[in-house]
Image (cartoon, rainbow, N blue to C red):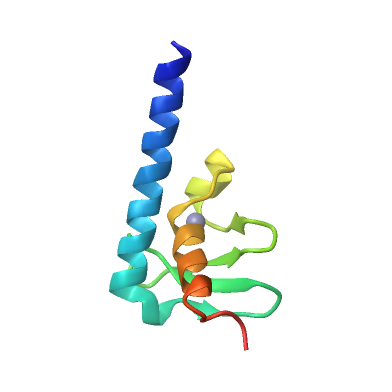
Amino acid sequence: MTEVTVDRTTAAVKARVRRGLALYRSRGEEIVPKTFGGFSVPSSTYEDRSYRVCLLSGRCGCEDHRRTSRACLHIYAATIAAAKGREGR
Ligand SMILES: [Zn+2]
């Protein structure tokens, strides 16, 4: 029973990492560094929407993060952008 739960969690994390990487690859130019570890990250669903991610607190303004309190795809996409050296100027 416990193992099933762990597997599901792992699958959910992997799915978010995958979607975060896909978002970084397709719309990485729109991931904009802000002050204090913040990033503006485009929505993967809505063309005209973007979310504010804070890497210092590990928070995002999207529904997924608000609902689950877990790292969402925007947080992963911002993490990738930061790791690639696009952190705040
Ligand atoms: Zn998010």
